[in-house]
Length: 369
Image 1: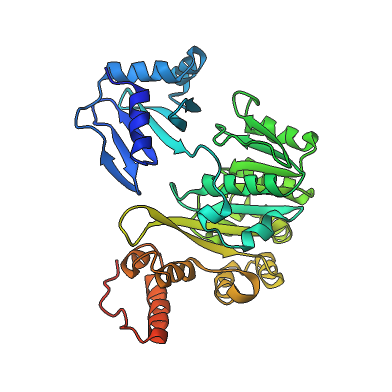
Image 2 (image 1 turned 30 degrees about the vertical axis):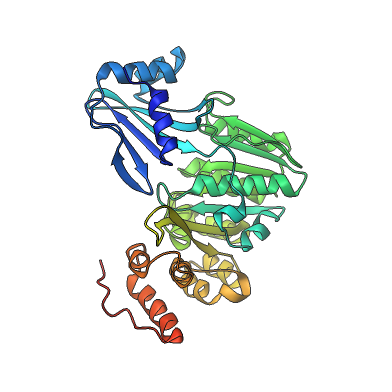
């Protein structure tokens, strides 16, 4: 009978990012963003049940039976660490595992824009890392936490569900709290965090009104607050944070957000030019006085145009500018770049302008999606 450990060994050996195990289906991994078969033999109900017993404690198994899904993490010696989601589908148990790197990557390894180092040096404010599923948000957040850990003496408190990266204290004191293990729920953890004398608070994903409201409040009380949001752009993120509140509070939230927001990093992973591996494309929005005024005055749709012109002075860049720069460096192809943006016409104009400056052929032959 095949074991969970064997499959985890296989996904790490193949440099996969995710592992999917479902009763009656063949095991699959996600490699370079693409789902691929790991074996052509379907998994049996007995195999999945043994994996669940291998992964979960008896108490967690009881919780799974009651609520039908469960998040946890797992460390396998000599193999690696995994974030695990166990859930029920069509009356059977399924598992989705995400590989967590052994240690947080550095800014240099991720090729993050230099302006991010300035963001995490701030004593207070809200810094958000946003993007679709599988875009590396948690990895970037971990790099930011470990960079703070290396740079200054600060108390960093993380609230996670579950804990993903384990940090080795350097200059900072790091407190990691896992929902279900160290705190009953997010609500109680958020209520207690300000009593723990934090300098930096990392909240994981902002999913609902409570977490969004708490993030704004913590940032407003003078703490550097880090979090992720499942959105596709900086502008969409601002709208999402406001829309999570009741309509009668929108003016108040816009004013609050205009004061506490320190920066938004929107990212996605795109296939590199060599066909193996992916490259990080990063959009950066820094709230200048003009952008803060636009947020306060409910003119959020105008922020994008300021981002387009704020690259040299403020370190901002749109996603299209980031993709065009990756093309210029030869890290991705123009076809991949155009397929990766919701604004392909604008990107084609940028690429044509860049190619025109080099005397290259324009991209009139590229077909839009």
